[in-house]
Length: 125
Image 1 (cartoon, rainbow, N blue to C red):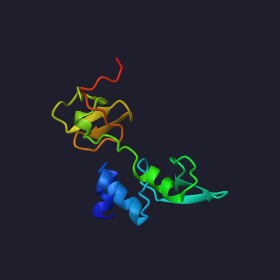
Image 2 (image 1 turned 60 degrees about the vertical axis):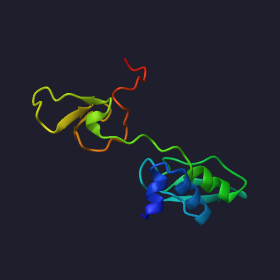
Image 3 (image 1 turned 45 degrees about the vertical axis):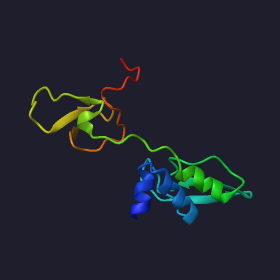
Image 4 (image 1 turned 120 degrees about the vertical axis):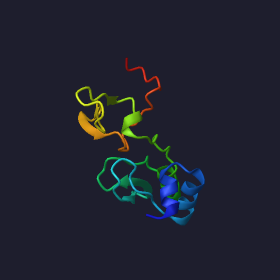
């Protein structure tokens, strides 16, 4: 992965636009798989190789790639500061926390795929 692609995946709008200009199709933001442009009856879409994500269908190939590349980046954070992080009551000094979203023990320093800042109100009381 190039620095340009890395910046684009982190939500850098200029990097996303440059990837589109260069014809680079970014990897899937959900599973990390390669994404490909597919032609369907003269129209275009971008789909993940695992079919977990894709764009609408566009008349123009460049517009399909642009739609895929310029999506909003999900928030990035560590498990220990995530809303889904539960306390490790039995061992408070342990570097693990219980993730209520994954239903697993995670390291506090792991990056979270379902990250929500713990101070954010998400209507989940």
